[in-house]
View 1: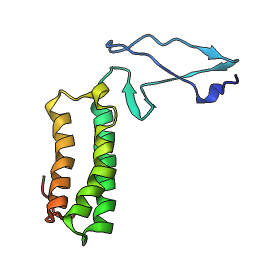
View 2 (view 1 turned 120 degrees about the horizontal axis):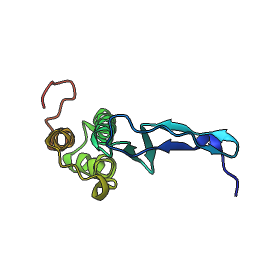
View 3 (view 1 turned 60 degrees about the vertical axis):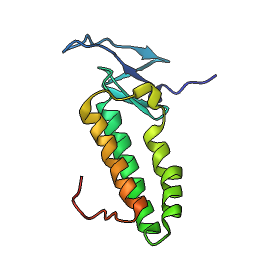
View 4 (view 1 turned 90 degrees about the vertical axis):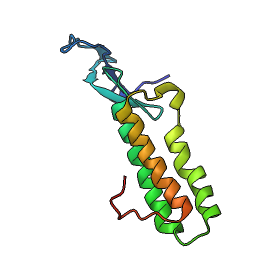
Length: 132
């Protein structure tokens, strides 16, 4: 098996304000230490906080909802609901058993996308309106 050391990173998990920095080499290449990394679609941080992952997921789901709205806003609500369940909802729920949010701010970010989707499926969603 061949490894590509340029794709390998180090994620030091610690609650310390300034964790110790150690140099690791792999296949003769010094590995880069990072504060966060995405693995299998889940963003892991050095503090094991989920706020960055929740922000990424809610942003991606909101973008997909916008694409669906631009293409299906004139369709019947059953088609819009099916598009939501097929494209947006899985983005919000992917691996949620792992990163299930418990902070109110993270829950609100996800709920904001859910409310937009509910208005979209009901037929009264305007992405240009500033409603939360």
